[in-house]
Length: 229
Ligand SMILES: [Zn+2]
Image (cartoon, rainbow, N blue to C red; front, side):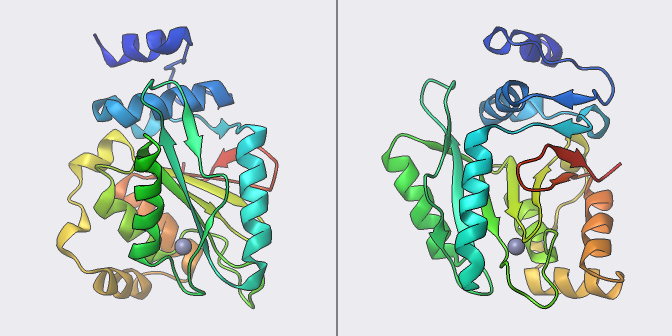
């Protein structure tokens, strides 16, 4: 079955595959994530991602709760997964506490193990940046994108709860054909991109452009708008 047929038939829900469709409602977003989680070859081309995505009330509630908890200056971490029936998208009910600087690998692994114990397969994650900061980081850090590019074969989406916005990042079909920084240590990757960028926002945009990642951003409780064109 072709990718198009797969998407059209997925749970009987229609996903339009026009070039850059205008918007995905939550059901379309969910169907795509579930499809990606067990059919990585279904990853869309960079230009096939929509301009806006609408999330459900549950997602916004978890984002808001996570943002609120991060007021203590500790990053938070939550899991996105799917159940054995492939029809249920799972979100952690509460985000785990990281450190003020990052999410330790052990914290992430614990959360993933907990999900596996509940028959949940991992598809992506959510982390937060603090709410109180002199220069709050309102975008994925270079380190976040390095981590995503290295683990993109098992991680299909990353989400960021920033102080004033929510962000999502997806890989595109083109991401696969660009050599990924698997053998470039994170520290070096950060150093290289910092040198070529004006600030964090500029660095994220340049890395996304280079690796054809699709990034969305939106205000709390609002739809997410594509910021990589
Ligand atoms: Zn981060």
